[in-house]
Image 1 (cartoon, rainbow, N blue to C red):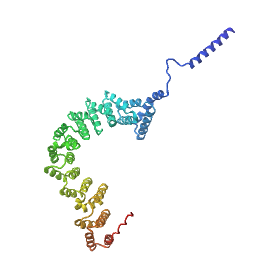
Image 2: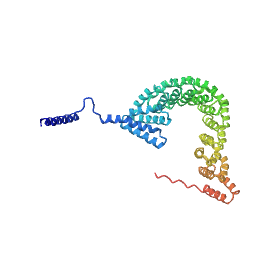
Image 3: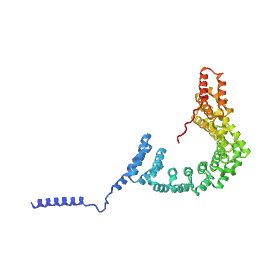
Length: 452
């Protein structure tokens, strides 16, 4: 019995000690707070979602991206960004682009500074593709983060061609950069790799450098054998506006003999430099006959900007029936800026109300309101459009004649023209003319006086 008693006493003691240990916190284990637990669970949860960014189904990728953003709001956003930047080396471009997009969107949730700091640190990574992705992400964040510009500027000196090109492209997307960045981009124009040079020039064309050395460099590039370099150099000069005047000799040569893509940018630049010399003016007029529609359209814009004379109005009018809608639209847009002076083009403008292109029709309608009523010499031509095959043109001619008659001055001419036409048309058209004559000949009701 004593032996059995001792056995039960031992069991009771063990039970009591075990309960005591279970109720006493361990000295080597710190308590886990809810926030810490959430942060600790963020990595595996984010990892599973990030993996879905490469799913072939767009709807799955979209849901995964949204879930990642929601998770970043609830947990450690920077931890999730770290997970995402690890995917910058993924072999699947869809995953890389999805990761970039998520990083950029997370930065917009009040984490810009931290995200840019992390990306700046990753910019020194060994993997080239990862550095390229960093440049792409910073370019989309950069407009609201000066440190992003600093990092991208430093990446212009990266040993990898892809990184230098991506950094240059990213800086151009800012729309405006600091004084320190433009010289770095100009220096990159001398890069031995064409893709880097193209990226630098594209960015400069968006930034619009003010440095005198930029003009000299572009003048040199306008004579380059590479047509794409010449095109981009002309684009940079276009953005520079009046500061590009020293390049006029090279621009003139390029307009007379270069490729259409270069001519378009040259004409854009010339349209920013004020009244041209007689030789340049003649070259712009000649460009309105270029076989390339974009050149003709840009020539119309340049004429409207800097050559304000009757010859320009006549040239723009001659472009209204052009086979290309964009040319017709540009010609109309600048012809209307002459307002009443462009009255001689009124019949041609009315014809554009029946244009197949909606933008041209809208421009024609706007032009008619600016050019004003028909003058005596234009009445017969506008009245002749009442018999046009297009109902839009017929309606436009009718409105123009009624409006002109109400404003006075040409009412007698309009009535005379309509009566002359009435003798030569059939019954249906004659009835329409009779109705129009009655409307025009009817006395205009006097306006009621406004009560005092």
